[in-house]
Amino acid sequence: MPISRRNFIYNTGAAGVLALGARTGLAAGACPFRLAVINDEVSEDFDHACSVAANDFGLSWIEIRGMWGKSAIDLSPDEIDRARQILDRHKLRVTDIASPLFKVHWPGAPLSKTGPRRDPAAIDADYKKQDDVLMRCINLAKSFGTDRIRCFDFWRLENPAPYRAAINEKLTQAARTCAQNNLILLLENEMACNTGSGKEAALTMAAITEPNFMLNWDPGNSATFPDDTPYPDDYDLLPKNRIGHCHCKDTIRKPDGKFAWAPVGGGIVDWVGQFRAFKRDGYHYAVSLETHWHGGVPPAGSGMSVSEASSRASMKGLKETLAKAGINC
Image (tube, rainbow, N blue to C red; front, side, top):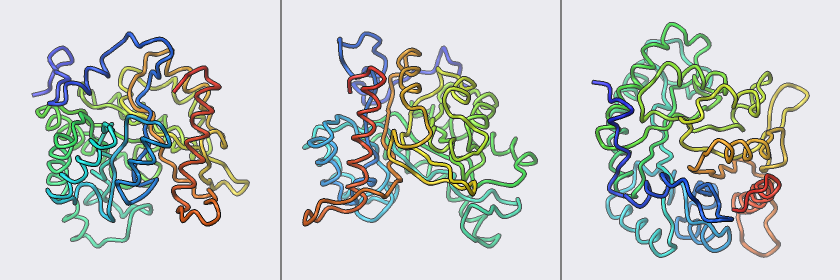
């Protein structure tokens, strides 16, 4: 049975995480957001990524996606324990599990052009594995003390209309499973999936009304659509009280209609306006750097990777953009 908004209890075992999110009275000058970075955008070495996040970026939060050459959902119990010890040592809390849940083809539909080439048997097998992926995500969220799991809504179809109701039902059932575990399911608007733009996100959120089903708002992804203006146009369409996470990156549109990634503040997304609107509207969840851009230049002789250099440059841009919005983080 659907769970009412009144009865849904936002309570995981990590009471401190949720208590922070529930606070409305922040200390003067305190960052209103959970400023974070996706760990493997810095380094696959989890200890190094956490060190950079905590010591160089000055963060208290980190978003977990992959480490040591594997997706977080494939970590062994020993690796999970090791990762928890690293988090404790660096005094970092986890915003969410940035899982690949439902980033597969929809069975029975024409093959998506954005997903990997698969035969029908493999597509069906991938789809059937998603229930197991969800349970692994739930266990990971509990292990890492977070109340949020990120998902997608299947590789993008040229015409999703005949399948949209069934896709929504699959997401609804997943949200209910998460609710039984006092967890929030975050749908990311991802241009390679069926909910890609802000306009599409508004429609999906209107169709799926589970109280623990929230949006991972990604203005950078929305900006890849030529007719979309992530802020203010797309943001104005979104249910503000159902935005539960935000990914930060920037986008450049090329003359040929294609796009490229950019450091935050270096593209077409009006991040200053977006951050001001977040503060105005009482948003207090994650603002998490998802670098994607790989134009950073490592200092000579540093041994630093391009990914780390790019993330450092983009975090600098993110903090400068927050400052322009009058927000101290």
